[in-house]
Image (cartoon, rainbow, N blue to C red):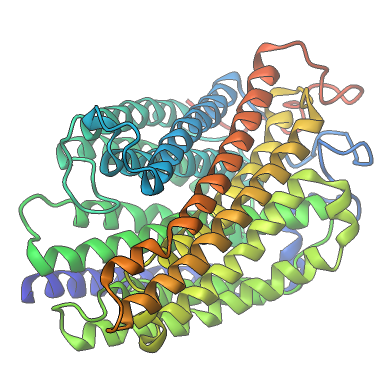
Length: 532
């Protein structure tokens, strides 16, 4: 145990040194000499004050003057990122529905080992986390970072190589998991021999964004840039340390496992989601966020308090008490970051409800931001020992995880893709009605899913704590709620199929141009440097 905890402490110390260096650099370059006018960095001069949404007939339909010149190479990269991420979403959703059905229909599909619950659930998790969310989130960064920094994406070929390597490595991981070969740790199931190639692909993603940041034509880095740049440093450190072969075992392995699993959500997916929300919400509505200073407070509070949150999953386990206590304290302190984000984003979106009616992408993004607040506050509550005693090892935790990963990050990505692709392709969405159908299917499906597992998980926990009841009763009480989970998951999957169909028609069908009178979408800003 000393080795693992010492390793994590050494990493935390090294990360702190890097954070201090970043802080010194930010101060020396006057990144903290901020005014509320910095919140308008999402707008170019003369922009703002009106709806900006490619799906709305009431939007300003001219191309954004802030959009950098887009080369064909850059456009192809974005299309590859979003198409492959959508494919992984569809596959992952099908795997998830099969796994869910098998929880209350255990005799279904028992004739093949790859179709057993353990493998189906693992395929679902890895397809969605490393396929849809990671590829979609990085693809969004490939569009947003250059847009905010008013420069073309640099080193595009590195990024394309990363997309190819990442997809092939993930495909190999999914195949070997289906065949029964995995590392046996949640969120770390892909064998480390294949993880090496994921790491290579991730490095190819990071290099273009770092070069683009260095080539930026603005001095001030908008808060979205802070979230994205931090994620580029956090995720590789997490991924490499957690996947070191032969280092962790037993309780040590559990400690490293949950340190990694929770930080993938908080220090990888959360920055990708929050960074996107901080751009799309004000951009679509046409108004800056409530307080720019609060946005930076929220970012630094996340950086300071999140890194040890995952240990609360080990309450009652054979780990030092101080490790768990540190996690509980940091989980509660995360309320600071959550409230800062909530004040900024919800004040803007809920104060402009007219925009919810007019903009379908905003519905996804703004609702996703609300789900982030709810998931984070629920997570802080779950870390409290008295509450954790009931919810630990139950379906309640599964509901909470989906509230953060799906309710927040996936919803933000849906809205972002609906906003970006017309500007990337120059084509309007061919089936606007399908966007609304997608929204209501996933909202209704997720509501059924979350409520069913929350209630069923709580009843399960109470039954397990009742010494007068047989343990089997704690399983039987969940069966109706597991059926609700399957119903909700099926509706969500249908919504994903609608999303994928709309995407396919956009690329393969005959659709009208998004910009009808204002010229080509990539003519707004000259390309300052080669992106190759």
